[in-house]
Length: 405
Ligand code: NIG
Ligand code: FE
Image (tube, helix red, strand yellow):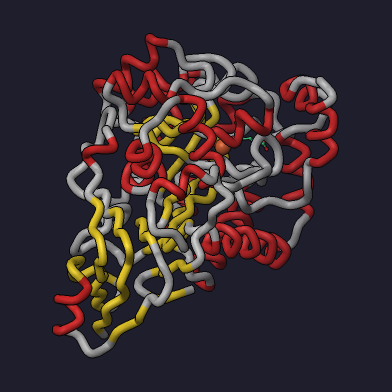
């Protein structure tokens, strides 16, 4: 089924931009008075609307001013969880540190208790609501991690819930197994816990096709670099793509990510010039998470330095009940750009094709022939208005695989 959507005042195609390093706004290709020819769920052509309209009888007309961007990709979330951590948040804003709250029984293990208690249906219902909000805000692809189960049974329940949302929702979900989020409370020894995950959980995840990616939290309070190296090499040998929660409070994780060929290393708030230099040489995507900066009241990851050194930088929300409860990708990317001095092109790239690369997806994130017709339309006539409103100008029309949602 073929149709033409348009005319759009501007289509920001993000074509011909580098995968790594800084991008100037002069490099942006803006097509004016353009139409998007969609064949089933794929973009067939983008060109002058008045020309294309002569070739196609099926037209979805846009009457208002509209600027089109590729649908956004949120490459790092934990939107499947039970309960809330509003109590932790109130303590944090009153000055109690995140890691101290965790040591006192709050933090990630509090969400583990609540997620273990939640039924599959409850997890599906709440994750569906969050996915719907994301899609309405232009996020057409969303990564979702497990990691609040920490037992074979509870991790599988989370991954089943994530799969169910993917099967029933228009948004595309990419599932990641984060059983190595923390040592499960039933174990005294991290190595024993990771070995059980490797032996009992990951083969099951693989054979049931519940996830294709494995993540680990490398941090003083979670798993060491040595534990991470062993675990990730084994996961890789099982056929998983790998990614790391790296350099959130202490370094080590991102160097490991570059060493073992992780697809991405995410967080990077504690990364120094030494870590930044590693990303320049590696193929690993540096994923920065401004929502954690807001949620924990701490530093931003060095996005500007990473770009200047030649890294591929993606921007994601880390939407989760603890460190990043907001989950607003556009707002977070816009504010990160203002603080870190990113060009509009760099911010758009970080939420689209560079974020897709962080998920090892190469069929989305640019508006060119052959890519998925995932589109976010904004009611304005100037693409610069989008970041100028710092997240308050949301898309008024979103298409997933060519269908208005
Ligand atoms: O990405 N850093 C580790 N994990 C999550 C936090 C999860 C939580 O606080 O519940 C993160 O920030
Ligand atoms: Fe995270």
